[in-house]
Amino acid sequence: MRKHTNNSRNRGIAAVEMALVLPILFMLIMGVVEGGNAAYSWLTVQKAAQIGARFASTGRGDEEGTRLSQIITATEAALTTLESESYEINVRSWPDLGASGDGIDNDPGAPCQLAEVSVLYTYKPFTPIVGAILPDSIPLYGYDRKVNEPWKPCD
Image (cartoon, rainbow, N blue to C red; front, side, top):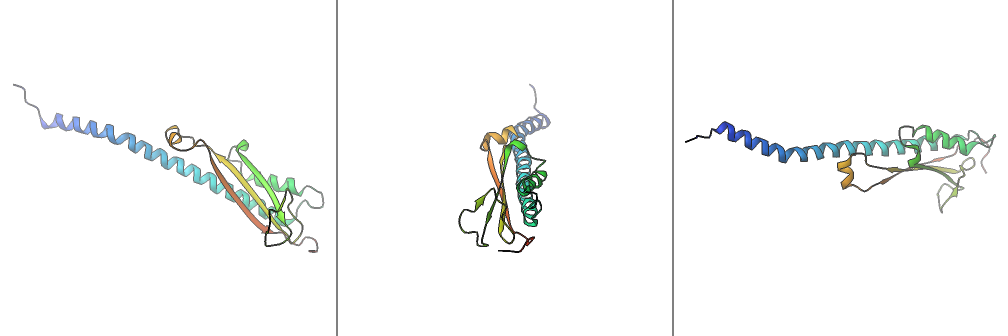
């Protein structure tokens, strides 16, 4: 008659436990990686909008008529780590500081007016396991508003 030792039984139990726990641990690690990447992308979008709004408030390019394109270029420079076909930059302004109404699209405003730069980025999960749980794309939105400096006398 053959006798079973506790050692062989323990190895079998450990293998079963590992088979049950390992996929859960792997999913948890992938979730942390995906969450970190999504947070990095959102912070990049926020910072790019801040940089664009700060540039817009200076009035640079007003005399040459290139102000809007320079604002977009400054904002894009902060988005170099993200996929360029996945974001959209909008610039608008309001004549009053209350920002009432929809604002004027594609216009950074005149001196002492309120300018806004917004960035919409479409985040796509890159880990296949977590990507199966999350939607195909997640919109990340960031914006910042600044009062334009008085580079000319205010109206």
